[in-house]
Image (cartoon, rainbow, N blue to C red; front, top):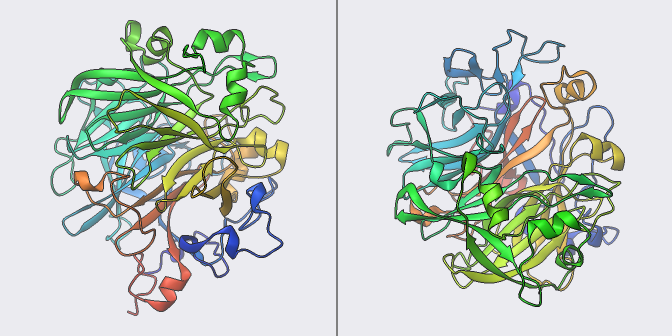
Length: 526
């Protein structure tokens, strides 16, 4: 079966696999210090193809117009809700795009599945792509679109698999009381036990986007709520959290904490300080290579609306400029947690930290109460709006952009995906290679120019995911060192907005040498 027949163009690279892609492998004319080595970014003009680094190929595993095998009312397609009765695309009254977002790859028995929450449209829902199913009418199923308490279902952004509770955990990125964490229990076959989305209020309510487990059964949350506008940019307003359950495997009760960063004199950096002075010297120092700050986890007690955000500020935790997603570094026994910071996504911002970055939190263990925070990579105009994050190996970190339409136009460049080499000591910028120059499909171009207002414009990179599908605790991201696109390891990303295509990455060299190594059937000889 060849998925290119479903009408989606696949742009390919030219001869070098990402697994071995380093700046040393690039032509002498490349400029690795600028983070633009590998391929050039696409101009923010008209329709553009995706461009991958040399040797990479991608094939679609699902796309927005694909009907669900088991539709429920207006929840009818992989990427559309038809509640308004509009056509699926490129029309002034088009249907609501539901934006399949982050991916979780799991193998149950002999079945290979990819799960997603949906962050757009009138309500959220959760889908599952059966990667083994060749009949496209049966490929995507609706896992859940109703809550156990009968309340409205929020839209979802983050997703992870919790092997301790046997639940998909989903993050709703909204201010309290709408935001928070929800669970869907799966059985040993990867099917929903009752098809209900269960709220988990013990984890607080906030604009959670990133969600990640550790080996101790804790849940780490990364919040994305934009701060108030001030002269020159925006105020830091979002936090990094850790939830420790009272009883292992039970998320109904526990302790919610937020990260507090301390100044050199030991005093905490607080929300009030940064709101009063968003140019505080701390922000400049935090966004300087070689910097290091002591950290402490402070307990937050949610009050009105179960708001984690307000409680974190009251407890003296330290806010950031829209942190979005986090992941543990393999080989560190869950002692290094990396998270992105999107920044202000505005070329005109003059405040320190305006272009965000990637930060490293180092602790003696995932349960430690203290640690060290340092910058791992600092953004600039050419690479900012950093969002999804995933390790491709022990030292290679994949980071993708969500810069937004305005910044695309300001810098005349669409979003990109980068591979960061973290093998250095952290005193200077790590090597960065652009593995993906995202394009803009016809539907996204239409939305950008003529959208009725409820569908997004330019395509966005989301859902970068590298996993071998192990559903046990041994398969938690960070427990094993990935062998990207090798053996049982598979790599996915979603081109959000527009046609809403979810892609699987492959290496051309592996496909040419081993015809049976492709997961999408493109090497089938029947």
